[in-house]
Image (cartoon, rainbow, N blue to C red; front, side, top):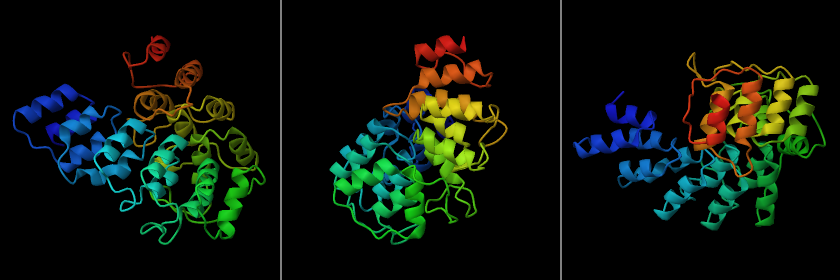
Length: 297
């Protein structure tokens, strides 16, 4: 790993600037990982023309300010199919609305992953009911197949039976059991849907996007009620999504409070829940949130 990339991953902006001042050239890999930081100053420091094609990695996170950085630099949201990516990653209404206001075509067919799928059908297939309703209000249309309709029924609370189908988005586990959607619903704060799926026999630690468990995804988005349900149902508090170094669910909540902050997320409450339940973390104060710091101390 280069020194520049290491500084980015450590969140050390001063070191990034020092290395650049010494003549280290910014590279696209470092810029890509800078998209994982909540401070747009990392993007400013490492940008070179063409790097804006990393916009979809920024959309892996709930970061409206970071998305605004890309939009202000004229990124073509249709060329990169940003709306599809944001829907698949469960982005909130503010981010989705920003993309629509920037000219994202609500009826543009996808050119990757699930080729030909329109945004409205993708929202249905991903169980993103809020996105589905927003797109419909903006004139989106699409033919829903049987799988789309079945997942949408689950999202609406009309069913608790997920259909068998391979995911339309990448970064999710292999298989066709629909299990990745449990984490998607958890990240969206759909507590009632999560409860219904668990009651129907889904395992509480079923892995979803990037190996995260539903508790990881709830914590990452500050979904206190959903996290409380998952803890009560026996979710693994010490699970590490990537490798033996983490992140644990509590790591996800602390990191999410800075880098993936949903508009309606309760991060202090989620951290308090997990700390009280005995969840481990590698984070120590200061975290940037005085309320979280007090809990960790």
